[in-house]
Length: 299
Image (cartoon, rainbow, N blue to C red; front, side, top):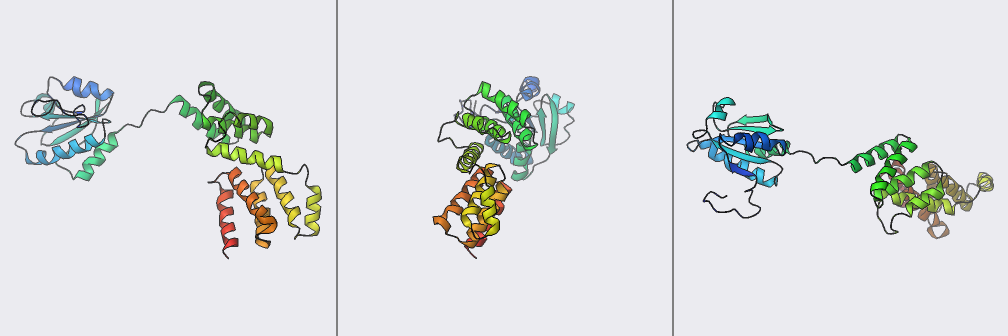
């Protein structure tokens, strides 16, 4: 209800700002705070600072969109809980969470501090089981526990077969284990136009592997005999990329570009971009490689 007894329009904060009382304190504050944090503003009609603080609290609570509630209690009409909480001056503000007071302050504060007080109370959204499994999978993969990562991603896919992050993660697990065929099968579970960093990395890696020569011993001999043999160096780079040695592959391709920027109609640069995609756009291989490429192209 609004102050004049009419229903407040939607979005005004009517559902999470209310006038409280001693009679309703347990329900409106203690019990309600088990679901959503509740701010209690102890005030009085004759209190000048209360008139300054009240609107600032209401504004901040409305901005929180229901993540925090506000109960305003006139201490002259409702002295019981103010006394129990030892309110000695007003305005006094208490914040309750899970049935107990967790924070508070006395006196009027600047709007920015009021906003910070309210924001601090907002609970983080609960983490879903799916999100926990995905996080476990990513962490396990980074630590080299491929089996543990694969199990976590597979559990997600049992419940959500179209989860792109789990598809990409599981495909990366197979890549890490050297099973390119199984990695391709898992990656194919996602739509061809699906955008996901892990999927894009897997697809680029598979593409590099398909294009790689079956063996590079001959190319290595040619390159040793003639460091200017760019075709041999490109074959060596392709072989390194297929083995997952992306930093070494990037080094070889950057060497070609530094010697001949436009060799084979830019083939080395095109291959280098695939290596970056396979490594991941935020990887150290890509960051350092792009810096070196820029230095070569614009020197």
